[in-house]
Amino acid sequence: AALEEGLFSSGRREEFLELVRSQVAQDPERLALYERSLAEGAYEGVLRAFADYRAERYQKSKSRIGARGIADRYIRAGDYDKAMDWLEESLREHDPNLAYLGLPLYDPLRGNPRFQALQRRIGLPQG
Image (cartoon, rainbow, N blue to C red; front, side):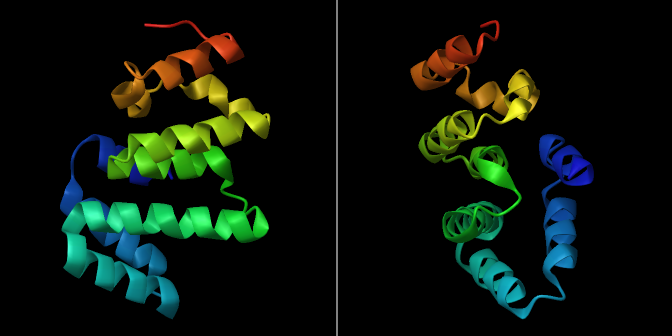
């Protein structure tokens, strides 16, 4: 997760995609999803497809990634409305990791009124 975050935040798209591919290489279903989404939507398509995949798994079984992890994936995919939906779900889960909303990953959400309201509800400083 740390390597994935580092590659994403530094804009190293090709290396990020290679890492994702290596992570799913042994799972035919996820490998097919990777290949299909890469062909259809390039980098952003892969990000979106895997965010959707995790969201679907969460809905079915409350997978261990949790709602905040899904929100993180939607942020990377540029779908900030869905990211906010999942951050709000994370609050309902009482996820202690919401304390990390100050990380640069969340910068695209800072001007969002929903994000600001979420920060107020959990008592985090704004700005």
